[in-house]
Image (tube, rainbow, N blue to C red; front, side, top):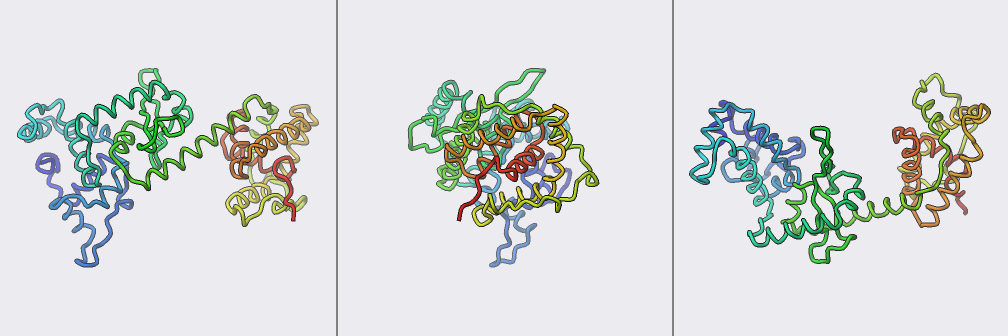
Length: 370
């Protein structure tokens, strides 16, 4: 129906790509459209088969959590008014209430329903849907603010990252829902996540155990981060660190001092066999910046711009508190970096460089014992 009215003569594969681009943010490279070895289908023939026989389950599952009805509606409403009116007329045989004003909305949610069903997600009946909506409303009132803060105003569903706040006419408005993680369990705080409305609506009809486990893993990370931030609340950090970070930001390669003058063996603090990514990250920062950063901090201390002894004591105290709470090395590195970020309001990468320096200075992480 849409091809007849808005394709401008485009062939099926081109128009199909256009439709998917209208309703998702998924690139074609992400589509689950492998060649069929039994029939030697090319990708274009695969797309033609979707238009004739319906979407494959694998393809639908690859896009079902990336749907954007708002984007589809906005795109369709930019088409010529005459084409929109014709679409409304065509659709009236299915829905007599279709008009030029509401056809974009109706088609968006019709398309979403097609994709969800193809993905194996069967919409709830009206009674179940109303019950879920009522439950979601009650959970949002009771736990919404806490869960939105826990997720730092970003949809907690894996791969989404939509903001849970929308700024409009100078006013910030929360736009989110509260979802049960394990729908067979009670709606307690440790079984709830804040999601954008679309992810919430899709997960409400999805019983995938794989996604359930992913969401449980995400909840665990969010809870651990929240706990760490609470542990560090009220712990001071010398504000002079801001000036140090600004100097790091303004550095050019020619400003770096020869790192061989004061080599530091990070293996004494971090075992690459336990976490190679963390080891390589810290080692790279230390190899590049340690000597130069030491000179910057020492000079700033002499000028009274920073109390170096105080910063060392504070870093050690922050580390010990996190270690006592049994945080992993990765969590400790991330949370101290976050603490520096909150004090300095500087970009994460520069805060991590500072933390790596204090790892080399023995304020963060204890020496590995044989």
